[in-house]
Length: 291
Ligand SMILES: [Cu+2]
Image (cartoon, rainbow, N blue to C red):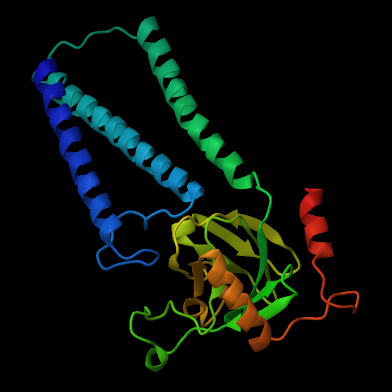
């Protein structure tokens, strides 16, 4: 009975793992940075944090599947082996020290095994590497404003493109008129806030999701390792047009970024700095180094 059961369990796990790897490899073939039809699982990770998130998720999925199947197996075994017909005279045993220790200690060990990668990930998310670039994202009903405080306070709005404004290749409801442009393989800090109500700035492929809270600045970071265009959406219910304030981040080479900065500084207005002098990066860099 035991051998038969563990054989079936092993086969079930093998089928499950094969199915997962098929689905995940299918996702990897999909276009970077945006969702696809019938998608299962996450978008392909392009930052170290998202890779860790995906690995942790896959690990938990396997663990939880094994536990669920084990409990299901026990339930079925008990129902068949110890029902009134199969076991007319029940045992009156009420204690088993070894079993009681086991069902206390084993779950604790499982929780410890989960906690280690979980805390490692949590610390990695909040362990801010030195910023190569800082971008401030401000949520408004219903568009985003971006500022580049260390690039002469460059500022612009990003508004969703309507269907008739889309260029070929731009996804519906995700593309914006102006993109956040950042260099590849650089640590980008995002300072997120809002001007009116709660919003949420997120890019799934980066593993980044933070609330935009009026009156507060919440910081996050990413290091995108592949060039491309990555899409996200406001993820905090913020009113009537919540679904129509997407986020577009274009990750480009250093040279392209320098070129974009050049044109962007001409195209977009720069905010005056708080002191009223030439726009300067000092207050922001100072604030970041204090942490
Ligand atoms: Cu919003």
